[in-house]
Image (cartoon, rainbow, N blue to C red; front, side):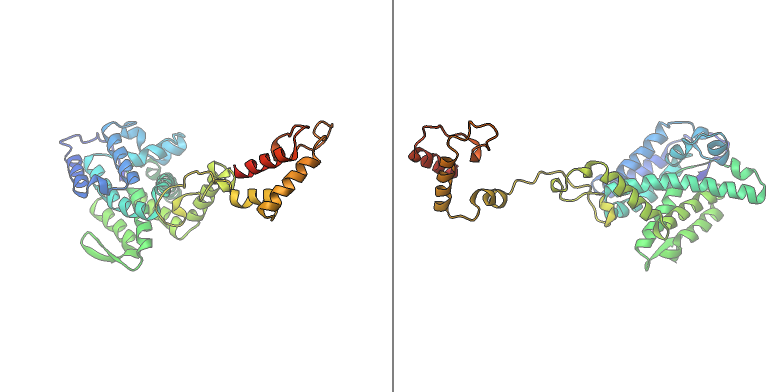
Length: 329
């Protein structure tokens, strides 16, 4: 999440965009999961056609809290200062997105990115406001940040959480995964003074809230509430399963809707046969029909069995033939 200073966006040769396109084609668009590819495309689109100028998209305590411009929380992660800023963020997101989306599934990954994007901005505002109070330095509240880096740090914490025993390389140094985010936070701040230390720190804190705090549980509860009051509120017999695939960490989306066929071999046969043999069924059907003669015209009399009337003058042979045909159908 680079700090945006009072300067215009660099619009040179777009070399960063060209390198990003080259990277995507080297990986192969078919090898990039759909959510990851869509988020990449959205960031590139908003760089070329921004929803707002950078000074109206970046987030700060002054603009978001004092002036109540909360839409900046949505705009700031998706806008970048220049094409190199976009390139480095999107290349980093490409590899994290491929691994995490395949592990968590598309629907949960969308949910995760949405929550991380919003919370990273909120935590950034809280930390900057706290620093303002502790130091009495208003510059912390005036600092305006923009970019996807905060979300990337949250995703890095999550990715390292799934591989706790591994190692990674941060600027050429081999670092255990559990410490990689902290080491990268310090090194980036030392080597790139223009970046936002607090913005990256906010991403790490959000990632820890998910892996070691209550955020994951809260997200699950919210997802369960939405699904239980939405499409999953229909009778249970109409669904094989429901919910986000991210609950178990498996891929795939919500299950499809299907109607279970009636179990004629159990329910209907039990109501019609009552455990009788075929011959006993026919005899019982004839007796029932004969007993119902003359009652169908009486007020309040129960309807004849099997849903049809027999004429008053019907003979026993006709009854028997009709009952035979009824069972055959």
